[in-house]
Image (cartoon, rainbow, N blue to C red; front, top):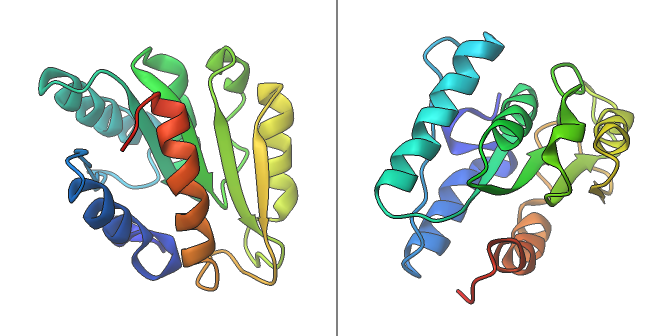
Length: 166
């Protein structure tokens, strides 16, 4: 659905261009076996490890739909994950959300999502015991109407979460 370019008509591509132009490395991951939660988590964890070995001290892990569960699970498992961002996440696979141990969690979800209801993100935030659910008014699962809105919010959230001025 969102694929390597991401939801919102290429959100991951746009994030990559914006942040890398500021000297902030960005890695996008394509899963070897989509829909295999364990394998996908290993793919993302390997990318995080690669970033750490290349000099990153902290990372923000993001994922859309099924990828939200992947991002959350990697965020729980890896201390280098400073925070997690999900876009129209599913709640299945997120049962370990309390393991974020207070790390920031930002969840974007359209209130007209035709695949996963807004309550999916609300459930994940409740399981985590924290998290900011940002409603994207009038938007569906692919968040095509909310790209700029999401990017604007991430412009504030990412530096706060990483503890950096970029």
